[in-house]
Length: 256
Image (cartoon, rainbow, N blue to C red):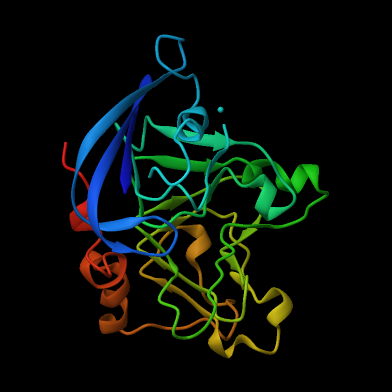
């Protein structure tokens, strides 16, 4: 199995690492012990690296070895995307429309980590004007069942832009999203969330906001089915070891 690690400021280095492993998932991917750096790929927009764009660097990695849009497909797991600072390392685009095709960042692979990077979906700034006032969506999380342990957790974030947006649209009747101690600008619509095709079946949709601030954080007109988590439930989602590091896969990330 392989890891990839990326650093971006004025330039970006992709460190592609190899791993000897213990588990086979049936797709030729094996999981297990610590990794080592196998290849360094430099992304530099001034032309002094291997590639000009992050996506080009990711695309250069063979399948199963383990202003732009970035998409990480399912057969390129174990990527660690690390920026110099979330204030200076920004991945952004300005598309709108179909959520699958217009997203600035699309992730389909397992075991992905991003730190010190700001992902800006600029369509939040332009959707209202381009689509005659159509409201956008910050998330569209899909979960297959109550037993599915997936979900989106946004902790200590800033959400801003122009136009208007829902915090989330249910991409399945078990959709789960938590915003924790996040600052919202006034772009958030008062209802907050949309059940989409699951109106009347919101009982299993798990959408929550905890200790958020800013003009968009007023919950007085939020949908009635938004969940109110108790402190113990919140800790299950925001503690890395309990939610993100299920299976202890973070311990296997390479050190640098």
